[in-house]
Length: 200
Image (tube, rainbow, N blue to C red; front, top):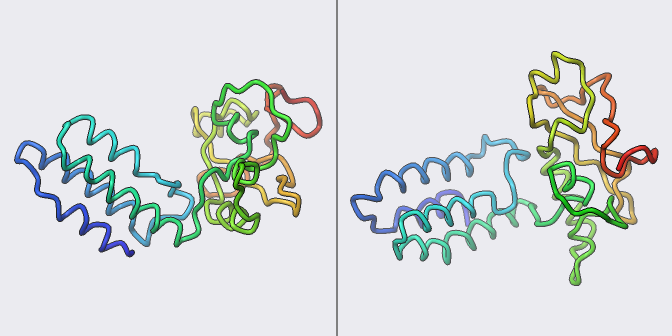
């Protein structure tokens, strides 16, 4: 399954006149997502799946639900072929994104390694290397004022490498627009599961 084949699935759908604009806009998003020029960290496991669901719910037309049965599995196959995998984030990373789960005994191990049928650690390592960064809330980092203003509410963090036991080797670090770790940052007091014990 390649980029063109995925676009052809969408192009094969017979579209009602009143839905052509929605489908055209979605096709543009799909083409952009599949572009070889798109950075690996800008893709997410099943990153377009929710857009298809929204499209289907908005119009209520049967052919959109057919897309759910055909396009999402095809996208999943394509993403798997690139090395993307689901559930590669740790609970620490999920809390940085805004998860409200209160307690966690293994906050540094990706969820994919803790499932009933866990993925191989090599798969998860590869997927995290491919993704490299993810977006979280800026509030968990103390940054110089001009940097904080530029980042606003959301900031990229590093997806840290995993040890052989599957734990991240260190706490995630904030990344600037140049994709370099921001110098001089500190962790906020409420940073979740901070390794020096000061976080929450």
